[in-house]
Amino acid sequence: MNGLAPHAMSKTVGCVLIVTAWLGAGCAHEPVGPPPLGTIDYIDDEGSVRTLAAHHGKIVVLDLCVASVDPCLFNARAVSEVCDSICGDGVVMISLLFDVLGPAAVTSYRSVLKAKQRVHEAGPRLRSEASALGKVDNVPRLVIFDRDGRIVEDIAGMMIPNKKLSAVIDELL
Image 1 (cartoon, rainbow, N blue to C red):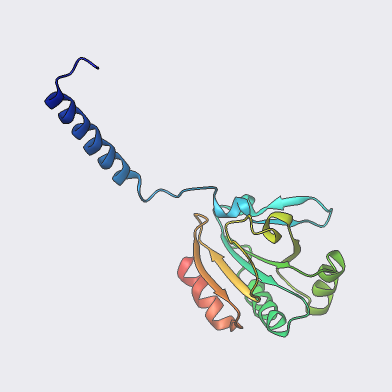
Image 2: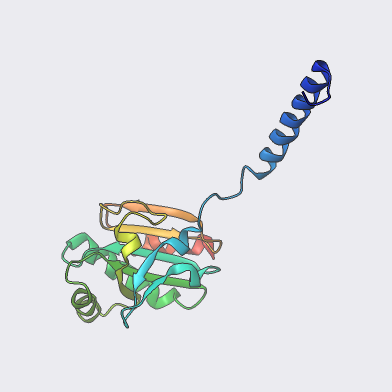
């Protein structure tokens, strides 16, 4: 069949399995799939679809919200206050809106809240559950990424006091 005696073939197969298992174990900690920041998209002010991949290497605080939901407005104020003192020092804060009003909601959100963080409309991939965040059906949702683009906090459905948000970011700095 392959020129090996049956007992030699079983030893060869055993060695291949051991080597494969050993190699696989060494790679088990490697991330699988696309980097999370590259799968999260938004629509910029010019109407172009962008991803958060450009922010790799920074701490990213992502506020997923709907402008008409009161807890979302509370979180937006907390994010804005924290951003006022921390943004620019390797920290990026972004609110992504899931409103049906689209750009009008973004404009309203910026003017009413006087948001210090970036505010954009959620992109098509994020809306279609094709991003690393999966289905976004519970807002407010606050997701914090470390400098390597890994999710370190994912808090959904509750209001986040700005002191807690500051403490989480301070730990990452």
